[in-house]
Length: 465
Ligand SMILES: *Cc1c(COP(=O)(O)O)cnc(C)c1O
Image 1 (tube, rainbow, N blue to C red):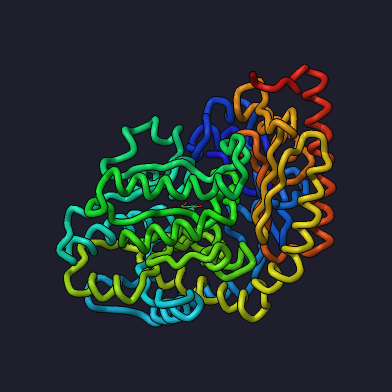
Image 2 (cartoon, helix red, strand yellow; image 1 turned 135 degrees about the vertical axis):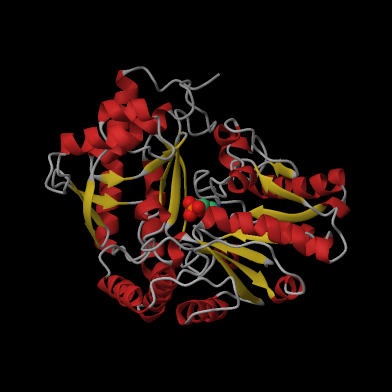
Protein backbone atom coordinates (compact mmCIF):
# COMPACT_ATOMS: atom_id res chain seq x y z
CA UNK A 1 0.00 0.00 0.00
CA UNK A 2 1.36 3.45 -0.93
CA UNK A 3 1.29 5.88 1.98
CA UNK A 4 -0.73 8.87 0.80
CA UNK A 5 0.08 12.22 2.42
CA UNK A 6 0.39 15.91 1.59
CA UNK A 7 4.05 15.17 0.86
CA UNK A 8 3.23 12.67 -1.89
CA UNK A 9 4.21 13.83 -5.40
CA UNK A 10 1.38 15.64 -7.20
CA UNK A 11 1.27 13.15 -10.09
CA UNK A 12 0.85 10.28 -7.67
CA UNK A 13 -1.99 12.02 -5.80
CA UNK A 14 -3.68 12.79 -9.13
CA UNK A 15 -3.40 9.20 -10.30
CA UNK A 16 -4.92 7.76 -7.12
CA UNK A 17 -7.62 10.45 -7.16
CA UNK A 18 -8.52 9.49 -10.72
CA UNK A 19 -8.51 5.79 -9.83
CA UNK A 20 -10.87 5.99 -6.86
CA UNK A 21 -12.53 9.37 -6.35
CA UNK A 22 -15.68 10.21 -8.33
CA UNK A 23 -15.87 14.02 -8.63
CA UNK A 24 -19.20 15.89 -8.64
CA UNK A 25 -20.19 17.64 -11.89
CA UNK A 26 -17.13 16.27 -13.69
CA UNK A 27 -16.36 14.18 -16.75
CA UNK A 28 -14.02 11.68 -15.12
CA UNK A 29 -12.13 10.57 -18.24
CA UNK A 30 -11.19 14.10 -19.18
CA UNK A 31 -10.10 14.96 -15.65
CA UNK A 32 -8.05 11.76 -15.36
CA UNK A 33 -5.99 12.78 -18.40
CA UNK A 34 -5.37 16.25 -17.09
CA UNK A 35 -5.08 15.58 -13.34
CA UNK A 36 -7.02 17.46 -10.66
CA UNK A 37 -5.30 20.38 -8.99
CA UNK A 38 -4.50 19.29 -5.44
CA UNK A 39 -5.28 21.96 -2.85
CA UNK A 40 -3.35 21.40 0.35
CA UNK A 41 -3.78 24.47 2.59
CA UNK A 42 -5.56 27.80 2.82
CA UNK A 43 -5.30 31.00 4.81
CA UNK A 44 -7.46 34.13 4.52
CA UNK A 45 -8.37 34.39 0.82
CA UNK A 46 -5.39 32.35 -0.40
CA UNK A 47 -5.19 28.67 -1.35
CA UNK A 48 -1.95 26.71 -1.65
CA UNK A 49 -1.63 23.73 -4.00
CA UNK A 50 0.64 20.69 -3.90
CA UNK A 51 3.18 22.48 -6.11
CA UNK A 52 3.41 25.32 -3.60
CA UNK A 53 1.52 27.80 -5.84
CA UNK A 54 -0.53 30.47 -4.05
CA UNK A 55 -3.94 30.96 -5.63
CA UNK A 56 -6.37 33.83 -4.97
CA UNK A 57 -9.77 32.27 -4.24
CA UNK A 58 -12.29 34.38 -6.13
CA UNK A 59 -15.07 31.86 -5.36
CA UNK A 60 -14.81 31.43 -1.55
CA UNK A 61 -14.49 27.69 -2.01
CA UNK A 62 -17.92 27.00 -3.49
CA UNK A 63 -19.58 30.33 -2.57
CA UNK A 64 -19.28 29.49 1.09
CA UNK A 65 -16.08 30.46 2.92
CA UNK A 66 -17.45 33.89 3.83
CA UNK A 67 -15.17 34.54 6.83
CA UNK A 68 -12.07 33.28 5.00
CA UNK A 69 -9.83 30.29 5.66
CA UNK A 70 -7.76 29.49 8.71
CA UNK A 71 -10.15 30.64 11.44
CA UNK A 72 -8.80 29.04 14.60
CA UNK A 73 -11.94 29.96 16.60
CA UNK A 74 -14.04 27.67 14.40
CA UNK A 75 -11.61 24.77 14.75
CA UNK A 76 -11.50 25.19 18.51
CA UNK A 77 -15.28 25.28 18.90
CA UNK A 78 -15.56 22.09 16.82
CA UNK A 79 -12.90 20.28 18.87
CA UNK A 80 -14.51 21.32 22.16
CA UNK A 81 -17.99 20.24 21.00
CA UNK A 82 -16.70 16.88 19.75
CA UNK A 83 -15.33 16.15 23.17
CA UNK A 84 -18.40 17.34 25.07
CA UNK A 85 -21.17 15.89 22.89
CA UNK A 86 -20.15 14.77 19.37
CA UNK A 87 -23.66 13.69 18.39
CA UNK A 88 -27.12 13.35 19.65
CA UNK A 89 -30.36 13.24 17.69
CA UNK A 90 -33.34 15.56 18.02
CA UNK A 91 -35.99 13.12 16.74
CA UNK A 92 -37.36 11.59 19.91
CA UNK A 93 -38.24 14.45 22.24
CA UNK A 94 -34.63 15.33 23.04
CA UNK A 95 -32.55 18.39 22.23
CA UNK A 96 -29.11 19.84 22.99
CA UNK A 97 -27.57 23.22 23.73
CA UNK A 98 -25.81 23.99 20.40
CA UNK A 99 -28.99 23.47 18.38
CA UNK A 100 -31.00 25.60 20.81
CA UNK A 101 -28.41 28.36 20.64
CA UNK A 102 -28.21 28.30 16.84
CA UNK A 103 -31.99 28.24 16.30
CA UNK A 104 -32.41 31.20 18.65
CA UNK A 105 -29.56 33.09 16.97
CA UNK A 106 -31.06 32.50 13.52
CA UNK A 107 -34.46 33.74 14.70
CA UNK A 108 -32.61 36.92 15.76
CA UNK A 109 -30.59 37.54 12.56
CA UNK A 110 -33.25 36.53 10.02
CA UNK A 111 -35.69 39.46 9.56
CA UNK A 112 -39.43 39.53 10.15
CA UNK A 113 -41.48 36.64 11.45
CA UNK A 114 -39.14 33.91 10.20
CA UNK A 115 -38.47 32.46 13.64
CA UNK A 116 -38.48 28.66 13.26
CA UNK A 117 -35.66 26.50 11.96
CA UNK A 118 -35.67 22.98 10.49
CA UNK A 119 -32.07 21.76 10.09
CA UNK A 120 -30.48 19.80 7.26
CA UNK A 121 -26.92 18.96 6.20
CA UNK A 122 -26.80 21.31 3.23
CA UNK A 123 -28.87 23.35 0.79
CA UNK A 124 -30.19 20.52 -1.38
CA UNK A 125 -31.76 18.57 1.44
CA UNK A 126 -33.10 21.79 3.00
CA UNK A 127 -34.96 22.35 -0.27
CA UNK A 128 -36.29 18.77 -0.08
CA UNK A 129 -37.64 19.77 3.33
CA UNK A 130 -39.21 22.87 1.80
CA UNK A 131 -40.98 20.91 -0.90
CA UNK A 132 -42.47 18.50 1.63
CA UNK A 133 -43.25 21.24 4.13
CA UNK A 134 -45.19 23.53 1.76
CA UNK A 135 -47.24 20.61 0.47
CA UNK A 136 -47.96 19.40 3.99
CA UNK A 137 -48.80 22.95 5.04
CA UNK A 138 -51.51 23.36 2.37
CA UNK A 139 -52.83 19.93 3.05
CA UNK A 140 -53.23 20.75 6.75
CA UNK A 141 -55.01 23.95 5.69
CA UNK A 142 -57.53 21.75 3.85
CA UNK A 143 -56.13 22.46 0.38
CA UNK A 144 -54.27 19.26 -0.61
CA UNK A 145 -54.54 20.10 -4.31
CA UNK A 146 -52.19 23.05 -3.77
CA UNK A 147 -49.05 20.95 -4.36
CA UNK A 148 -47.33 22.51 -7.37
CA UNK A 149 -44.12 24.47 -6.92
CA UNK A 150 -43.15 26.98 -9.58
CA UNK A 151 -39.47 27.66 -10.13
CA UNK A 152 -37.34 29.14 -12.90
CA UNK A 153 -35.24 27.87 -15.77
CA UNK A 154 -31.52 28.09 -15.03
CA UNK A 155 -32.18 28.24 -11.27
CA UNK A 156 -30.01 26.18 -8.93
CA UNK A 157 -31.59 24.61 -5.86
CA UNK A 158 -29.28 21.65 -5.29
CA UNK A 159 -28.57 18.20 -6.61
CA UNK A 160 -30.88 15.79 -4.77
CA UNK A 161 -33.91 14.58 -6.73
CA UNK A 162 -36.08 17.36 -5.33
CA UNK A 163 -33.30 19.95 -5.42
CA UNK A 164 -32.45 19.26 -9.05
CA UNK A 165 -36.14 19.16 -9.98
CA UNK A 166 -36.77 22.52 -8.33
CA UNK A 167 -33.69 23.81 -10.11
CA UNK A 168 -33.95 24.63 -13.78
CA UNK A 169 -30.67 23.29 -15.13
CA UNK A 170 -31.29 21.48 -18.44
CA UNK A 171 -28.14 19.30 -18.26
CA UNK A 172 -29.28 18.07 -14.83
CA UNK A 173 -32.84 17.38 -15.96
CA UNK A 174 -31.49 15.37 -18.88
CA UNK A 175 -30.11 12.74 -16.50
CA UNK A 176 -32.31 10.60 -14.26
CA UNK A 177 -35.82 11.50 -15.49
CA UNK A 178 -36.13 14.91 -13.91
CA UNK A 179 -37.96 17.01 -12.96
CA UNK A 180 -40.36 15.00 -10.81
CA UNK A 181 -44.07 15.80 -11.36
CA UNK A 182 -45.77 18.97 -10.16
CA UNK A 183 -42.78 21.26 -10.50
CA UNK A 184 -43.03 23.88 -13.23
CA UNK A 185 -40.46 26.34 -14.54
CA UNK A 186 -40.88 29.85 -15.89
CA UNK A 187 -38.20 31.90 -17.69
CA UNK A 188 -35.38 33.62 -15.82
CA UNK A 189 -34.83 37.42 -15.68
CA UNK A 190 -31.60 37.26 -17.71
CA UNK A 191 -31.79 40.49 -19.71
CA UNK A 192 -28.35 40.20 -21.33
CA UNK A 193 -29.15 36.92 -23.08
CA UNK A 194 -32.90 37.01 -23.39
CA UNK A 195 -34.01 40.65 -23.18
CA UNK A 196 -34.14 41.23 -26.93
CA UNK A 197 -35.21 44.79 -27.76
CA UNK A 198 -36.93 45.38 -24.40
CA UNK A 199 -35.58 47.77 -21.77
CA UNK A 200 -34.36 45.99 -18.64
CA UNK A 201 -37.31 47.51 -16.74
CA UNK A 202 -39.96 46.18 -19.13
CA UNK A 203 -38.19 42.86 -19.41
CA UNK A 204 -38.09 42.46 -15.61
CA UNK A 205 -41.84 43.06 -15.43
CA UNK A 206 -42.54 40.70 -18.31
CA UNK A 207 -40.53 37.90 -16.75
CA UNK A 208 -42.19 38.39 -13.34
CA UNK A 209 -45.61 38.30 -15.00
CA UNK A 210 -44.82 34.84 -16.35
CA UNK A 211 -45.40 33.73 -12.77
CA UNK A 212 -48.91 35.16 -12.88
CA UNK A 213 -49.57 33.54 -16.26
CA UNK A 214 -48.37 30.18 -14.94
CA UNK A 215 -50.57 30.45 -11.84
CA UNK A 216 -53.60 31.30 -13.97
CA UNK A 217 -52.79 28.46 -16.38
CA UNK A 218 -52.51 25.87 -13.58
CA UNK A 219 -55.19 27.36 -11.36
CA UNK A 220 -54.58 29.23 -8.12
CA UNK A 221 -55.89 26.26 -6.15
CA UNK A 222 -53.06 24.10 -7.52
CA UNK A 223 -50.02 26.25 -6.69
CA UNK A 224 -48.31 25.88 -3.32
CA UNK A 225 -45.22 28.02 -3.68
CA UNK A 226 -42.77 29.88 -5.85
CA UNK A 227 -39.06 29.29 -5.20
CA UNK A 228 -36.26 31.58 -6.34
CA UNK A 229 -32.78 32.74 -5.48
CA UNK A 230 -32.87 36.52 -4.80
CA UNK A 231 -29.96 36.69 -7.25
CA UNK A 232 -29.24 33.53 -9.27
CA UNK A 233 -25.80 32.22 -8.34
CA UNK A 234 -24.81 29.03 -10.15
CA UNK A 235 -26.89 30.17 -13.14
CA UNK A 236 -24.25 32.84 -13.74
CA UNK A 237 -24.80 35.57 -11.11
CA UNK A 238 -27.85 36.92 -12.92
CA UNK A 239 -28.89 40.18 -11.28
CA UNK A 240 -32.58 40.77 -12.10
CA UNK A 241 -33.79 44.22 -13.22
CA UNK A 242 -35.12 46.36 -10.32
CA UNK A 243 -38.67 45.95 -11.58
CA UNK A 244 -38.61 42.15 -11.14
CA UNK A 245 -38.88 41.39 -7.43
CA UNK A 246 -41.63 43.89 -6.45
CA UNK A 247 -43.82 42.37 -9.16
CA UNK A 248 -43.04 38.81 -7.99
CA UNK A 249 -44.01 39.83 -4.46
CA UNK A 250 -47.27 41.37 -5.64
CA UNK A 251 -48.19 38.17 -7.49
CA UNK A 252 -47.35 35.86 -4.56
CA UNK A 253 -49.45 38.05 -2.23
CA UNK A 254 -52.38 38.35 -4.60
CA UNK A 255 -52.72 34.61 -5.29
CA UNK A 256 -51.77 33.33 -1.82
CA UNK A 257 -48.66 31.56 -3.04
CA UNK A 258 -45.90 30.91 -0.50
CA UNK A 259 -42.61 32.54 -1.41
CA UNK A 260 -39.44 30.50 -0.80
CA UNK A 261 -36.24 32.52 -1.16
CA UNK A 262 -33.25 30.24 -1.62
CA UNK A 263 -30.60 32.19 0.30
CA UNK A 264 -27.94 29.47 0.17
CA UNK A 265 -25.55 31.83 -1.66
CA UNK A 266 -27.11 35.25 -0.97
CA UNK A 267 -27.41 34.72 2.79
CA UNK A 268 -24.96 35.75 5.50
CA UNK A 269 -23.68 38.98 4.03
CA UNK A 270 -22.89 38.16 0.42
CA UNK A 271 -25.12 40.92 -1.02
CA UNK A 272 -24.22 43.57 1.58
CA UNK A 273 -27.18 42.76 3.83
CA UNK A 274 -27.60 39.75 6.05
CA UNK A 275 -29.93 38.21 3.46
CA UNK A 276 -30.45 38.66 -0.27
CA UNK A 277 -34.20 39.13 0.09
CA UNK A 278 -33.50 42.31 2.04
CA UNK A 279 -31.36 43.55 -0.85
CA UNK A 280 -34.05 42.85 -3.47
CA UNK A 281 -36.94 43.84 -1.18
CA UNK A 282 -38.84 40.53 -0.98
CA UNK A 283 -40.83 39.13 1.96
CA UNK A 284 -40.44 35.35 1.91
CA UNK A 285 -42.42 32.83 3.97
CA UNK A 286 -39.48 30.43 3.97
CA UNK A 287 -35.77 30.84 3.32
CA UNK A 288 -33.23 28.13 2.53
CA UNK A 289 -29.79 28.61 4.09
CA UNK A 290 -26.50 26.64 3.95
CA UNK A 291 -23.01 27.52 2.62
CA UNK A 292 -22.26 30.83 4.44
CA UNK A 293 -24.20 29.62 7.50
CA UNK A 294 -21.02 27.86 8.64
CA UNK A 295 -18.67 29.49 6.10
CA UNK A 296 -18.26 25.94 4.81
CA UNK A 297 -16.37 24.78 7.92
CA UNK A 298 -19.08 22.20 8.62
CA UNK A 299 -21.84 20.77 6.41
CA UNK A 300 -25.08 22.35 7.61
CA UNK A 301 -28.19 23.85 6.05
CA UNK A 302 -31.69 24.78 7.17
CA UNK A 303 -35.14 26.02 6.28
CA UNK A 304 -36.21 29.04 8.28
CA UNK A 305 -39.97 29.42 8.27
CA UNK A 306 -42.60 31.94 9.34
CA UNK A 307 -44.62 31.83 12.57
CA UNK A 308 -47.70 30.98 10.50
CA UNK A 309 -46.13 28.00 8.73
CA UNK A 310 -44.58 26.67 11.95
CA UNK A 311 -47.88 26.88 13.77
CA UNK A 312 -49.77 25.00 11.04
CA UNK A 313 -47.05 22.34 10.67
CA UNK A 314 -46.89 22.03 14.45
CA UNK A 315 -50.45 20.73 14.66
CA UNK A 316 -49.47 17.37 13.16
CA UNK A 317 -46.46 15.04 13.22
CA UNK A 318 -44.18 16.05 10.33
CA UNK A 319 -42.82 12.70 9.13
CA UNK A 320 -39.51 14.04 7.99
CA UNK A 321 -35.95 14.58 9.25
CA UNK A 322 -32.29 13.74 8.77
CA UNK A 323 -29.98 11.90 11.16
CA UNK A 324 -27.77 14.97 11.15
CA UNK A 325 -30.55 17.59 11.48
CA UNK A 326 -29.09 20.07 13.97
CA UNK A 327 -25.81 18.16 14.36
CA UNK A 328 -24.17 19.56 17.53
CA UNK A 329 -20.70 20.07 16.02
CA UNK A 330 -22.05 21.71 12.87
CA UNK A 331 -24.45 23.84 14.94
CA UNK A 332 -21.73 25.07 17.29
CA UNK A 333 -19.48 25.99 14.36
CA UNK A 334 -22.32 27.84 12.61
CA UNK A 335 -23.06 29.74 15.82
CA UNK A 336 -19.40 30.77 16.15
CA UNK A 337 -19.35 31.76 12.48
CA UNK A 338 -22.33 34.09 13.06
CA UNK A 339 -20.55 35.53 16.11
CA UNK A 340 -17.53 36.31 13.90
CA UNK A 341 -19.75 37.94 11.26
CA UNK A 342 -21.36 40.09 13.95
CA UNK A 343 -18.33 40.97 16.08
CA UNK A 344 -16.09 41.77 13.13
CA UNK A 345 -18.90 43.65 11.34
CA UNK A 346 -18.25 41.65 8.17
CA UNK A 347 -21.65 42.41 6.63
CA UNK A 348 -20.93 46.13 7.13
CA UNK A 349 -17.49 45.58 5.56
CA UNK A 350 -19.21 44.22 2.44
CA UNK A 351 -21.79 47.01 2.38
CA UNK A 352 -19.50 49.97 3.08
CA UNK A 353 -15.95 49.00 2.13
CA UNK A 354 -15.23 45.87 0.07
CA UNK A 355 -18.53 45.85 -1.90
CA UNK A 356 -18.36 49.45 -3.20
CA UNK A 357 -14.63 49.12 -3.96
CA UNK A 358 -15.07 45.84 -5.83
CA UNK A 359 -18.09 47.23 -7.70
CA UNK A 360 -16.12 50.16 -9.08
CA UNK A 361 -13.22 47.96 -10.21
CA UNK A 362 -15.42 45.12 -11.51
CA UNK A 363 -17.59 47.46 -13.58
CA UNK A 364 -14.35 48.89 -14.96
CA UNK A 365 -13.85 45.57 -16.75
CA UNK A 366 -16.47 46.68 -19.30
CA UNK A 367 -13.63 48.73 -20.83
CA UNK A 368 -12.13 45.43 -21.99
CA UNK A 369 -12.99 44.53 -25.61
CA UNK A 370 -14.34 41.09 -24.61
CA UNK A 371 -16.66 42.25 -21.83
CA UNK A 372 -20.27 43.17 -22.57
CA UNK A 373 -21.94 43.77 -19.23
CA UNK A 374 -20.48 43.60 -15.73
CA UNK A 375 -22.93 42.97 -12.90
CA UNK A 376 -22.20 42.94 -9.20
CA UNK A 377 -24.14 43.08 -5.95
CA UNK A 378 -22.10 43.05 -2.76
CA UNK A 379 -19.50 40.34 -3.28
CA UNK A 380 -21.09 38.35 -6.11
CA UNK A 381 -20.31 39.45 -9.63
CA UNK A 382 -20.35 38.37 -13.25
CA UNK A 383 -19.19 39.54 -16.66
CA UNK A 384 -20.66 38.55 -20.00
CA UNK A 385 -18.05 37.72 -22.63
CA UNK A 386 -19.12 38.71 -26.14
CA UNK A 387 -17.66 39.09 -29.63
CA UNK A 388 -19.81 42.23 -30.16
CA UNK A 389 -21.01 44.37 -27.28
CA UNK A 390 -23.59 46.58 -28.98
CA UNK A 391 -25.68 43.68 -30.24
CA UNK A 392 -25.06 41.57 -27.09
CA UNK A 393 -23.93 38.85 -29.51
CA UNK A 394 -23.08 35.28 -28.59
CA UNK A 395 -19.98 33.57 -29.92
CA UNK A 396 -20.29 31.31 -32.95
CA UNK A 397 -18.60 28.53 -30.93
CA UNK A 398 -20.81 26.36 -28.72
CA UNK A 399 -21.95 28.21 -25.56
CA UNK A 400 -19.33 27.71 -22.86
CA UNK A 401 -16.38 27.16 -25.20
CA UNK A 402 -15.03 30.66 -24.70
CA UNK A 403 -15.92 30.70 -21.02
CA UNK A 404 -13.92 27.53 -20.51
CA UNK A 405 -10.89 28.98 -22.29
CA UNK A 406 -11.10 32.02 -20.04
CA UNK A 407 -11.45 29.86 -16.93
CA UNK A 408 -8.36 27.86 -17.87
CA UNK A 409 -6.30 31.04 -18.26
CA UNK A 410 -7.65 32.28 -14.93
CA UNK A 411 -6.62 29.10 -13.08
CA UNK A 412 -3.23 29.32 -14.81
CA UNK A 413 -2.91 32.90 -13.52
CA UNK A 414 -3.66 31.69 -9.99
CA UNK A 415 -7.08 33.30 -9.76
CA UNK A 416 -10.10 31.07 -9.12
CA UNK A 417 -12.82 32.48 -11.35
CA UNK A 418 -15.55 30.18 -12.70
CA UNK A 419 -17.49 30.25 -15.92
CA UNK A 420 -21.17 29.55 -16.53
CA UNK A 421 -21.39 29.15 -20.29
CA UNK A 422 -19.71 32.36 -21.51
CA UNK A 423 -20.21 34.34 -18.31
CA UNK A 424 -17.35 34.62 -15.82
CA UNK A 425 -18.32 34.77 -12.17
CA UNK A 426 -16.75 35.63 -8.83
CA UNK A 427 -17.92 35.27 -5.25
CA UNK A 428 -14.87 35.88 -3.06
CA UNK A 429 -14.60 35.56 0.72
CA UNK A 430 -16.33 38.54 2.34
CA UNK A 431 -13.20 39.45 4.31
CA UNK A 432 -11.25 40.30 1.16
CA UNK A 433 -9.27 43.54 1.58
CA UNK A 434 -9.07 46.32 -0.99
CA UNK A 435 -5.45 45.33 -1.67
CA UNK A 436 -6.54 41.77 -2.44
CA UNK A 437 -9.34 43.12 -4.65
CA UNK A 438 -6.67 44.98 -6.64
CA UNK A 439 -4.84 41.68 -7.20
CA UNK A 440 -8.09 39.97 -8.24
CA UNK A 441 -8.82 42.69 -10.81
CA UNK A 442 -5.25 42.71 -12.11
CA UNK A 443 -5.37 38.93 -12.67
CA UNK A 444 -8.83 39.16 -14.24
CA UNK A 445 -7.54 41.75 -16.77
CA UNK A 446 -4.55 39.59 -17.59
CA UNK A 447 -6.86 36.59 -18.02
CA UNK A 448 -9.17 38.54 -20.33
CA UNK A 449 -6.21 39.75 -22.41
CA UNK A 450 -4.89 36.20 -22.81
CA UNK A 451 -8.36 34.96 -23.74
CA UNK A 452 -8.83 37.76 -26.27
CA UNK A 453 -5.43 37.07 -27.87
CA UNK A 454 -6.22 33.38 -28.23
CA UNK A 455 -9.68 34.03 -29.69
CA UNK A 456 -8.22 36.44 -32.25
CA UNK A 457 -5.39 34.05 -33.13
CA UNK A 458 -7.82 31.20 -33.68
CA UNK A 459 -10.49 33.18 -35.50
CA UNK A 460 -13.00 32.72 -32.69
CA UNK A 461 -14.21 36.33 -32.36
CA UNK A 462 -17.05 35.45 -34.72
CA UNK A 463 -20.61 36.13 -33.57
CA UNK A 464 -23.28 33.45 -33.83
CA UNK A 465 -25.67 34.19 -36.67
C1 LIG B 1 -25.31 25.35 -3.44
C2 LIG B 1 -26.75 25.66 -3.52
C3 LIG B 1 -27.70 24.73 -3.10
C4 LIG B 1 -27.33 23.32 -2.68
O1 LIG B 1 -26.63 23.28 -1.50
P1 LIG B 1 -25.78 21.93 -1.15
O2 LIG B 1 -25.22 22.28 0.19
O3 LIG B 1 -24.78 21.78 -2.23
O4 LIG B 1 -26.71 20.81 -1.08
C5 LIG B 1 -29.03 25.09 -3.09
N1 LIG B 1 -29.40 26.32 -3.49
C6 LIG B 1 -28.51 27.24 -3.91
C7 LIG B 1 -28.99 28.60 -4.29
C8 LIG B 1 -27.16 26.93 -3.96
O5 LIG B 1 -26.28 27.82 -4.42
